[in-house]
Amino acid sequence: MTRGPLVLVPSPVQLLFDVPKSVKLQAIELHDSFVSGGVRITLR
Image (tube, rainbow, N blue to C red; front, side, top):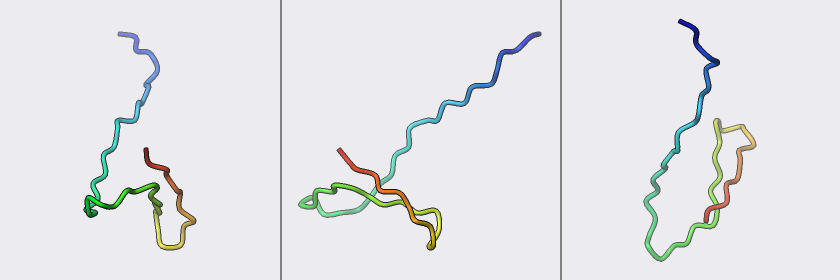
């Protein structure tokens, strides 16, 4: 049996945050450690 190349497709990720309804988040900042520069993600 011949197989083609393995293709990995990332699945969607859902993150839950407990914030008051009156708060409109504009962006979140994610870090992989305390010393990393992190990445800012703008929210829709």
